[in-house]
Amino acid sequence: MGKLLFGGHEINWKLVRERDGLTKQSEDVIWLEFNKNGTFKSKHKTPAVGRSLIMSPFNEFFIWQTTTITEIVEQRDNYIKFKTENSNYELFKI
Image (cartoon, rainbow, N blue to C red; front, side, top):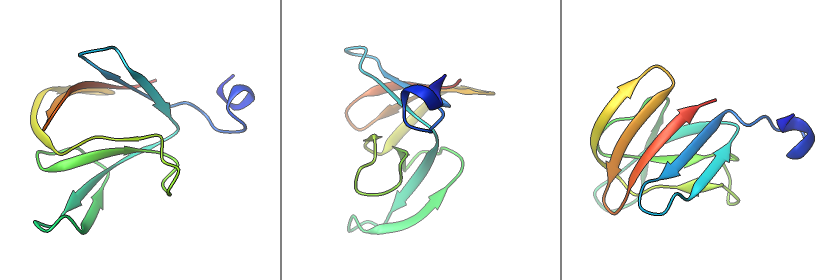
């Protein structure tokens, strides 16, 4: 169904911001790490404090990027609840 609605892309991830229920969906996610001066350092497949979430596509038209994770509140298969510098989020693999 996702391929029909979104031009050939499956929706595999759903991100929900706690304060207002803002919801973003994407095919894939990666976790970015930055140097102290704000430049790109590395990308990862797993979340960790100090990383930011970015939702595909992974180019200048990305769906969403969070600020840096400050705390992982809960993490289990296909789910993570985390706090960033300015928001709280829940990420679901669907």
